[in-house]
Amino acid sequence: MRNIPVDITSLAFIVAGEPEPKIVDRATGEVKRDAEGRELYTIPLLPKPNDDRRNPVIVVTFPSVTFPQIPEGVQVRPVGLAAFFWSMNGRSGLGFRAETITVATPKAA
Image (cartoon, rainbow, N blue to C red; front, side, top):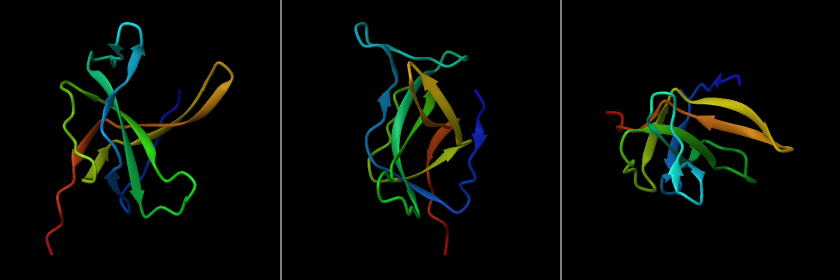
């Protein structure tokens, strides 16, 4: 699977919902892990500016050692954001992953 780096220099991202664990097995509640053993989470982000009125929110997968405490409505920075194409069981789409999600610091005037 090829990751395509996303240039976010002219974008801001607002958290559009709570982070959620990426579940492997709904029956057991097992959380998916990355190669380093960190649990994977998803978070919906609203990129600004965004001219796609049909589906303005993207869902980004990222690893975390602890459950991420990122409140809805804050501005964040998805470090190492990459897009990838996936295909499984006759379905396909575009996904996003990041190395980490950090709360953005306001720029000094």
